[in-house]
Length: 138
Image (cartoon, rainbow, N blue to C red):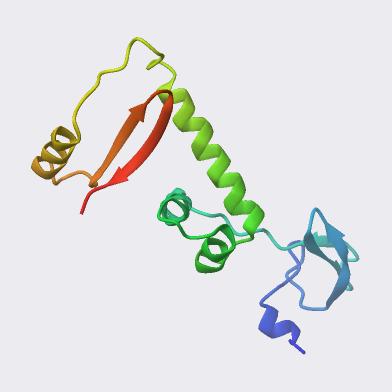
């Protein structure tokens, strides 16, 4: 069993370590302070946008959602939410490229362009018949 000191939790109102568990609120453990007789919760950790982008990249490289969640140390529903948000953002960016406005290029042109500009990430976006694929060049 984990002791209260190992939890590294103190009352957010009076900084007391004399508390007990008091249920859950929105999936987060709630505590009741015996000193000031108030309830408090620990704040959930904030995930940086770099970690979210890394998780999306792992998924695009054929890693499963549960495995990505384990690597990034979050829940699978969180990874799924990040993927859906990334998809929505990509769809908004691709909206101007409706049918009839697409430029058709050959793959060797993408490869040459990406190899020349090594300052950016080696990725390309292939758009064909309304479908888009993110390409990674080695």
